[in-house]
Image (tube, rainbow, N blue to C red):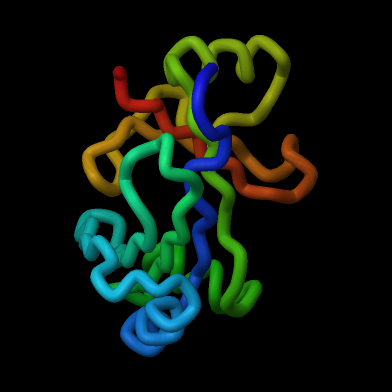
Length: 140
């Protein structure tokens, strides 16, 4: 694998607009990528460059529904670190490796995530209590 390992850190927030203003100040990025994934009740703001070689990004995760996974996460744990996302070169092969090693997968097949990227999640029971997202690195 070439380039950085860490794609982004996902942070669950109760008030996305307020958190965006804070992270504009923290990161100096005044124009984060905004996206809604309506079928998952999710809206997000991504701070930092999309190019994997530019380093890790910060993803703020807000809810559009009280039934969304983010709303449920915040009700159980409060705001804060939700997941870390690691780049992989071949997500299907990496999921097969995790499954063969006995890891509990939330996604046995990749799905489309923010920015149209191929992603999958590994259950935190196997990763030291940290929800792990895998993101396939863009070719080239």
